[in-house]
Amino acid sequence: MIDKTVASAHEAVAGIPDGATVMVGGFGRAGQPVELIDALIAQGAGDLTIVSNNAGDGDTGLAALMAARRVRKVICSFPRQADSWVFDGLYREGAIELELVPQGNLAERIRAAGAGIGAFYSPTGVGTELAEGKETREIEGRLYALEYPIRADFALISARAGDRWGNLVYRETARNFGPIMAAAATTTAVQIDEVVPLGSLDPETVVTPGLFVDRVVEVGERSWLQDGVFIGGVDLEGRPLAPAGSGDTEEAS
Amino acid sequence: MSAISRQELAQRIADDIPSGSYVNLGIGAPTLVANYLTEDREVVLHTENGMLGTGPAPEPGQVDPDLINAGKQAVTAVAGAAYFHHADSFGMMRGGHLDICVLGAFQVAANGDLANWSTGAPGAIPAVGGAMDLAIGAKQLYVMTDLLTKKGESKLVASCSYPLTGLGCVSRVYTDYAVFDVTDDGFAVRELFGDTTIDGLRDLVGLPIADFITTPSSGGER
Image (cartoon, rainbow over all chains, first blue to last red; front, side, top):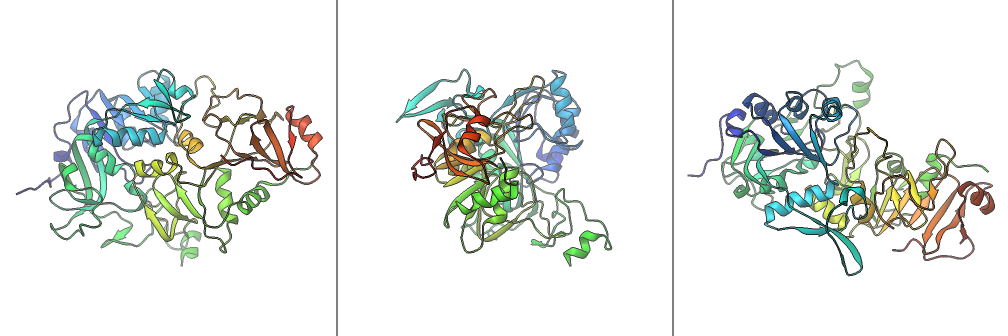
């Protein structure tokens, strides 16, 4: 019997060694595998290379992992945010390495790794400092730069639901990097709201087939859903809104 | 010479977006354009984090943390919306499937080069996001910007001094004084706002500027 479900987030991140390359899904808050990142912090692996769109914000999640000095290098498209003070400080101090990659090249390099592509020519970034030193080629009158795949030892992603085979469905724009990171890593761990019985996901709507997934952990329903239905009542970070009586809730009625 | 407001400029750009277009509006001022896309036109908005059919901000209390735009702001989904992963989303752009992209700029060069991701200031932490992909991704790239910097320098330049985002990618520049096409021969004015004159623009910009106002141009098609 195939059963990829594991009992805890700690089990889901077990075995990540020092020096590993770890992909972390999410775009901003949407799709961030918060529980898995926390488990990785507790697990203790260091000297990590993190592949993620952003480089952490505030003091939690990726920022906390970096603050604990466990990240050697970040490969991302947009490290600088209003509240990316942890990364900013480490970068200025020279304590963290940055490989800055245009977002679409980042996505395609991850996709290429999962799809067995050796390298590809992309028009994005040609003629800019981010393509300096890269092999270029003119194809049918357009300039391209050679881009190599980015693969990882582990991918940590988030989805809405899955079954014991690891078939996944996502939610809205929280899908972002999930499907391509799942395919690009040797071991893919997924946190989901709920494990559903095998056969209950419509095969027509499965987004990530279970073959790309190794470990699935149920972390409970996100607070803005109830039985899979959107109920709102939270801010963009998923925190409950101020109690009734504030201007916001009046307008919402 | 008088300049028009950000809102008036957004309205002016919206007027040039035909029904049926697939459009990406960049972070910042370009997102204002969405406010002026009237409902008699079906314009499908793409957001590069993975959605077509992006709708306006939700009512308070209806914010959905899973439903955001590329600026990480809460949005809604219109009827007919679709979600997809990042590689598909950027493939849509790189593959030339979007009709129009509207971006801000630090500088646009007379050959259509765009600089809008970094001022190159020493010590600044670099961040590019999707800027370079957006620059080369749509059939037409419109830039929405003030003509002048806060110091009064022209953002239309002979060649960009800031780090480049893309080569020869800009089709048209909508500024608060005038609309310019980027042609094989440099900038050409297609529309003046208020009491702006071409000679006045030439003084502000300090570059040769062709007069296309009475001659309908094919400039902007790429």
